[in-house]
Image (tube, rainbow, N blue to C red):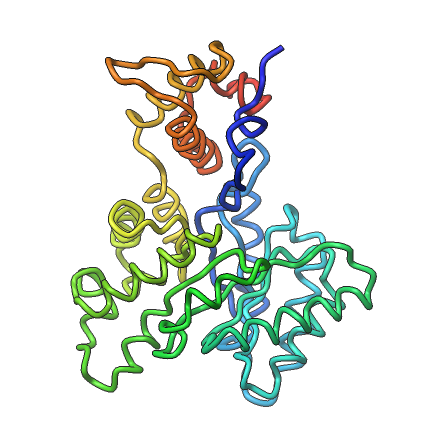
Length: 336
């Protein structure tokens, strides 16, 4: 009987959250419904390539916060949310509608709500306040699971405290909100750092990206890369996703236009050679009962097996071509 990598490689710790590598912002009913439709039509092997993030913050007109929250929550709870992979971005912790957003979303859609995103998370107390209220409402409604919390770091205080913020066990993802972060420097960082290549090259922004990524990964959460401003040329989003993954350790990215979704997924995919090597190494390791194996003149053991399993799992979840024998061995599927 063969043993699956997940059963032997993570006994001393947990793997990173296995969620889609892209999440798409949608701010009104029409865009949310379109996003759900695209989520269904682009799914691979019965799993979505991206999450839908319903925006209750910028998507809500002043005075219509409750109506927007109820509309989004009902869509998340409904049949359009075929995979249960939709979240909501609420108002920030200082906003008077923050707790109302939480209450509406959890009461209406709690059993199908993939996560809640908190923008402008300025401190551990902000995250704790929202997480505690989420849990309180969920318990009142009889929901047994903890709904994951994602946080957006957009301020000086948030960046300074990010390691303490992500240490809360309920946090699944951490994002650097690039536009608000640059704006918070009051002109000390040029506007060119809001988009590429400046957002990767400006020293203060590089420092912030690396700090957020290191904090997230150290706490077992996913670093989530921010938006690509250029929505006309989808290749820019793909290049941003690839650079964010390869140079900064980000494993997920926001999309602000439907045409960016699949390019972001491609940018987050491992390349074909990496996938082939990972499959070969893991199949050899499984045959050796997860003892050390050699591959192309290099020795591999459980430390590198964990790396290659996460790479192969990400390839599978992003719809990349995975060798047929690895699909049958590790994903319990027949090759397409």
